[in-house]
Image 1: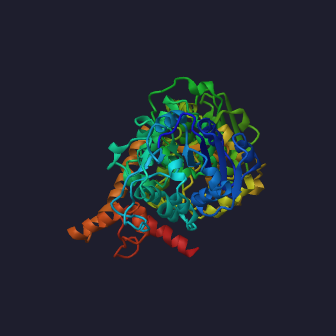
Image 2 (image 1 turned 60 degrees about the vertical axis):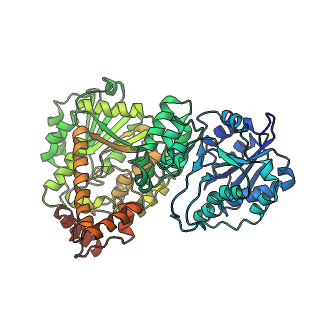
Image 3 (image 1 turned 180 degrees about the horizontal axis):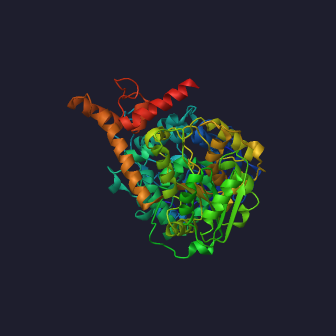
Length: 633
């Protein structure tokens, strides 16, 4: 069926948000979409805020809020029941569209103009390509067939008016989960009506991607927009499970797509940021966006930028023998910066002032503070009245980490933190230039430690601090996605660069030294450790993201260390004690799962030796010590 130029078209738009908030990417998308439709009907699962109703009200007075059951499938089913088949049959085309798509990058009108000329009974924007098997175990065919992806399906009168279409929806069973929605609707819809004799097509011809990705809209997201001129992209491209990402690619798609949107299209990426940072978990976003900034310590990409901004270095010094080392790192700040230093005795203050007297800066302010709250308390108490005057703040402190032996373990941690925070004046210029180039970057931190006793940090970034961090977030009014299974993108060690605006949620509380525990402070599970982890969530609640920052030398070490550790683990898993056949099967099992981590969690690999004996010594020994500490608690 080919449509006339003045075809009567109905848009049924499905929306869901846990809090009922309609972010502005939705009305932006609808403002373009509704130019090509006659009428609009909005169906919302669960809550819809008053502001959300106003936003939808700009496009239609037909807004149906229903219980959050049945996913999008039953939302469409009940929306059509609300409208009634008699009214639906009067339309030349009905569009079923949902909020999981974002755009348009290119006008929807161009898409409709092209598809109106197609002799089809139903069509969509993008296609999912047939799989050889059924990874969900729910498809009656034993595989997932070619099908139109359900974020956008347009149905013409020739199909909509048919008994087979009415029966499809009238007999739709209740959808109780995501797999239900796939097997009973999304993956079934196209084949079901094709077998009934109806013709279909998709706007984006990605047939040459068949065999490269089953769902190019996500797996080849950048190519679909850049090469195929797909007018929309999926939100999921920027926050999907990274195990799934690594099953199909080396992780480049979200980064390439965003770069293209930002530099080569008119799409306002702030619309995307406002939604993603409000709703999604920061760890998922960081991985998909690749928020890792490797900066030179020798060549400035924007000379003089640091001197143009109001900068503060906030440093806590406890150990007199580390004063000179701290001064050397502080010398990386531009001469125009203000330097605040806290310590706990008048004697140390005098030594610090004598040492730092030779350091050029705009202001040196050394204060004696109670020995309470380590570096965190003085930062929040003493700096509270000053932080608003600065554009960017660097927070560091001296570090020994005396709880780990030998002492080189702790000093190496300090080296890693300082190396990636205050390497040189040029490096600091590049940090500020990075903030300026990325207006949504709120906090930049060194990557977490992973050597010796700190190896266990990878995967256990929360330590014993998830509960106290969530409690602190509630106290500070920070309402973003904080999940125990997703690591905080925090400066573990309490070293960081931060944009002033990102600090406001933390400084909204009037901190006093009474808030902090007395010495001796426990190694984990205290308010200090919660504050250390709350900063990135505070930044997120203010509309900013957090990422890793590394010097070129720091990045070189990080790549070497991570590669070596993973290689040592893989050697044990794949080789030790296995013949060639067993090794091959293990490799296949792991590669066909959602990655190594999930395979281990699922019990696909079980060490045959005593606890931790399968790990290299540099990992095994500190891990065993920490394990025994945890077991004793």
